[in-house]
Image 1 (tube, helix red, strand yellow):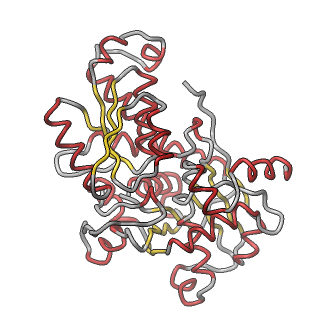
Image 2: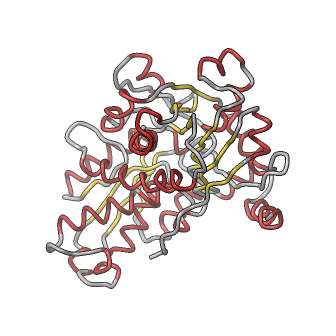
Image 3: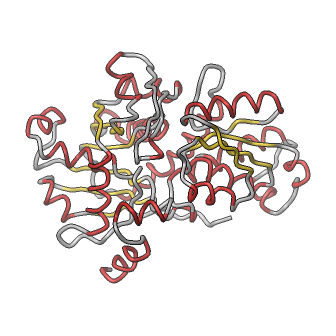
Length: 361
């Protein structure tokens, strides 16, 4: 199993100057456990927790990694639906700990993301429709076959495993809190089903109490279930193809567990276009005014896109409490999780950007 190490918190002084804020820090998850996404902290951890509940008492991760209880673990099947990153983490965890794994992908998940999952030995099943359709199919098949769903979204009667997934995400926020030279005033974080945003909010609240930063959730305008839920005042689904480039955020239904946290604490919700996300990817890849280039996937940059838009609109900046003294934390939730997509959007391969970053250092 890949050795744990904190991911970098990168100070982007050039971009901070361009945004006219005091400080901008980017938590870079592009290399987490070699899976290129913060999701590695959630799905694999939830697989471990589930196996520990269904294997003899006292079984540890070290036992499973050493091959003990392999026969018993192989009789357990875990499954989930995914846009890519969560399924990769679940498949990786299942391979590490010896369980069988079935992953459900909806129609628009790229072939590159499917290939990244199957290399961990998981069976992939393609489902017509969108992400939420694949979530429902995974739940039906698990009930029929006696499998265990390891989902990052929750629904009535299904809360325990998503709570474990979210608990795994808090490790990333704890790292950031330790790495920050001073508390941020604002945190822009991606939406999706809400699990990441809820984990970030909860852990920042735990770390800073009443002095926690203002937390702004940013979603694709084509898949804004959290924004719509905030507008209505209760969990509200958005329907349709949810055809955003930000594949990891293409979710139409809110995680009920996440919403319990978000409705009490998130300060603001906003949406951004696919075009804004691509521009943010390109800015990070180029480096701004002396910043080191960064590889950021399309689902990593919604928060940055939201900040850039806000600083171009004085009325919106004022509404969000942004000014020249603001200190911003961004959650760079993924790297190039699909190399072909990254190259198409940025105009060059991620390896070239990484080489420039090494030369910059």
